[in-house]
Structure formats: structure tokens, C-alpha cells
Image 1 (cartoon, one colour):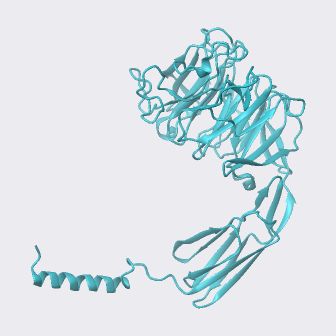
Image 2 (spheres, helix red, strand yellow):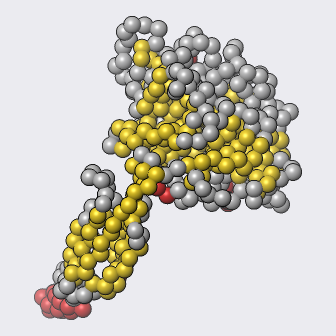
Image 3 (cartoon, rainbow, N blue to C red):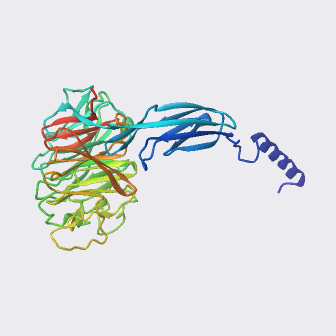
Length: 475
């Protein structure tokens, strides 16, 4: 225990330290007595702005409406006003970036005036690959990897397809019905470990997920001998509804969207059967995948450790989740309907164990019954009826996070195999808003979207043509 003399010395040292730090505020001096008034004009009522203010001592703040910022340190401040999108209307600042000098005890003023214009999108053909079904790339990579249903993956570099495939497993892939090589996913640490994963169907009608590795000698080629089977899922009987997408979530786990096994109406009840892996979203930990243990069950999977239920299951009640997408901590599942309605299910990535209803429900409609028990089921966030306008089979896309058309940030894009259109919506505050139809030429059979390493989006037609979504007028 300190002596009285030592306590006195310690107290004196504490006072000296506080004095050196400028007081007892934890070492933080007051920022200053300056102010900056940011005034916004000509924005529609209720439309939030996106104005970022940065200044001395790493000051940074984003505001959505006009306001006066006080307690600022003297110095130069930068006011950057991003363009804002509502539907297909863009509001842009006449002067997007302005500077203001804040003096102690004074208020500087910046006026931001907006004007509106119509945002138009277009599609530009970038490749034509017979049987193309998917496009992706490692984050930040300038190349595009195009998946060919027959069993090849091609590399497009600087706008040209390379002559030698990145991967060719046509001898193991069966393209019967809706089968084939359907997608691929790069590991989040691909730059260091070289791993990528593929989703295909084999001659036995099984769904197969494999891990492959890039060649150390040539980054445009896969290493043919470095193959590890992760999981094999029996798919007996029908040759449709295989699902088809393998993807990594923001949690680092591997996700698979499997179809219900095919046949009209899920005759075997697979989607609601928690002892089977069909009609589900699966979640696997493949961080330390090896031959003896190709995957482990994440401890947070909803049925982990439970008997009578497959622990791989993350969500159930899906008919044919051909394409789904992650956006930050949110998961969008586009589930293809039976004969009446298409749907998009949206949930937080952390929400495991959800049952999306098939084949009790088709979207929010009771399937083959006047009434049904909806308790415990999760209804879609978005749905539409079949018909000549809407189409017959949803093709889910992605939430735009690219830089080329920054106003589109946060919009989820989708199409329809029978519709040939391009549409989007914004999911905000647990509801779908700003449903927008974009004027582009009809594309016959939009069967997939793609996303490159910079977050730009692509459309893939049944003809094999690959289109990039661009701002209209872009060369």
C-alpha cells in the first residue's frame, strides 16, 4: 500500500500529466469555435442528400440535409456533394466539390444547388460464349471469368477471350436438363491461397461442389491436379431444379443454393424436409478444407448439433434459388416460382433457420390450396405475378456497388428469363421502394447476371452473349 509521501508524489504527477494534456478531458482539446453552414437547394422534399464534409485533424462528417456544424477548428474544409438517385431521376450539384475556410468565432457558408436529369442505362456486348451461364472475378481483379455450362471456365482479359480455358472439366460434367457447370466462387483470400470453388452436376445427376487451385506458374490457368471434393448432394429423378450458385458470404463461409429436386410442385416434399439438403440454402466452413474433412459445420448454423436435421442447412423452403446475392450484411435470394408468382427473399446474413415456405407457399400465395398454415414461414420481401409483362422465371442479380454509375449504389437488379428486361429496386427500412424499369433493348432469355472485380454488373443471355450494364452514352 502506498505511503502518505508516495501518494502525494503520485497526485502531483497526475496533476502534471493533466496539465500537459490540456485539462481533464482525456487529452482532447476543444476543437474550436468556428462553424460551417451548409445550405442545400432544389432537392425534392424528403429526398436525403449525401454531402461529406472533411477538414483539419481528420474531421469527417456526412449530412443528409442542410445544417450548421459548430465547434469546428479553424482551417480549410472540403464539402463534397454526391449525386442522388430516386427512381431513374438523378439530382446533381452544380458544383460537386467546394472549399470553405473556417475562422475561430466565425461562420463560413457553402451553398449547394442541385438540378435534375434522367439517368439512362444501356447494355454493351463484351463477349459471346456458347453456353455462358455466369461471370465473376476476384475482388479488384481486372479480368472476367466466364463459366460455360459444358464444363469450361474462360478468361477475358482487356476485352478479349484468352485462347486457353482457365479450367476444363467437360469430361466430368453432365448437361442433361438444367445441369452443367453452373457457377464458381473465388475464396476471400484467393490472392494468397489461390482457391476457387465450382458448382456442377455429374453423370450420376448429383450436385458436386469442388475446390480447385490456380497454377502457381500461370495465373490464367488452374492447376489440374489440385482438386478437392467438398460435398456431393444426391439429386435423384428429375433433371431440373439444381439451384446453381456457390458463393462466399461476408462471414467468410461458403453458401450453396440447392433446388428442390425437380418435378412440378416438389412432389417428394424435399424443400420442407430438414433431413435432406435439397431446396435449401447451405452454409459450410471450408477454411481448413482437406481430404479427411472437406468442411466443418459453423457453430452458428441453426441446426448444428441437433439430431434429425442436417446441420449444413442455413435456410429451407426454397424451390429453385438459381441466383442469390450478398450485400454487406444482407442476403437477397431470387427463388424461381412454379406457375403463378416469382419472389425475392431478403434477410440479414445473421438470420439463420428461416423457412421461405415452398411448397406450402408460392411466394405469398398458398400453393394448391385455398388456405394454408403460414405460421413459422418467412414471406418474400418482393414478388410479382407471371404474365406477358413480368415474365415467368426470375433471374436474380446483385446490389450495385460499382463506381462507374455511383448513383445506383444500393439498388438490387433483377430480370426474368421470359421478360428480357432490366429492373431494380431499393430495399430500405425493411421495405421495397423505388421500383424502376430501365429502358434497354429486350434481351432474349436473361439467364444470369455477373459481377466483376470492381462491382460492375453484366447480363448473360441464353444466346451466350455477355453484356455489361453501362451509363447510356458511355463509349
